[in-house]
Image (cartoon, rainbow, N blue to C red):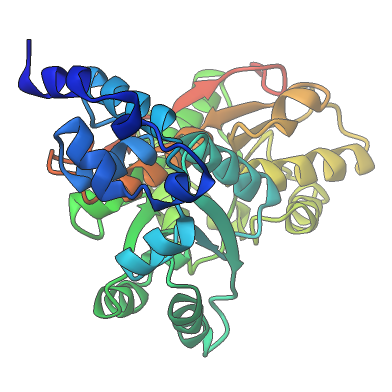
Length: 358
């Protein structure tokens, strides 16, 4: 039997269990570490529900915590770490569905831990937005930040966070930082699947409503879409390529322009589901049937894509899983073991009823 088990067995009730509230309050993390014969860091990992602790060790520490009535003090722990137990989500993505799914994924990772999620929306078009994020870091001392596109694509912001000794994870469609600070989505691959699907259905006059040009994901998706079309000897007509804003309204506006002419496209690929829903509205206002008159493909596979009629064909981007992995990389950053494998998520095409062959 391991020595630490023997030590635990020979301790009396008086030494293991405080008699009253005063004694209970005096139990510290150092006491727990000594009783379990482990380091303070290991006790901290157990308290924070870190997955990088042996189950046997976790059971021993949790048993001693229960028997002693030890209650971690978040404020004291935050002071010791010189930062809070807040995970900040910094975003300027205009798609509410994206942000909600990202939040859900982060909360999946933080569930049953002492960490809390705090949101920090921002506007990258604001010349002072980096200073505002810096003020947030100084004031709240977050444990770490999760940066989503297009904020994640700002190298100057990342450099500021490193200077402030603030951990972060960047979500992006390309490798733009150390692997330990990245969660990557293969947007180009997903857009290529959308192009191949429409080409295989016989469409040749295909429109594309892309996101803001300031987003790298926009260019990644467009490049992938072009590649998929090229595999079938097709090209993207500049006249059928419009810039949207990743919003419903911009989808309606762009699709109205595309579908109002006499030589309209037979298919539209929108850069996200929000804009694709806007295409639905514009098509119906124009008296067009989906998919009889126009096939529509979205991107992200947010909940609305399967609830709209007809259900939308879309590229599934595992946004919730991305959020979960990003949060796990942050809260595991100080573990001795290597961090999880770089988050690189493959995308898949979900074929529903908004597309059909000509």
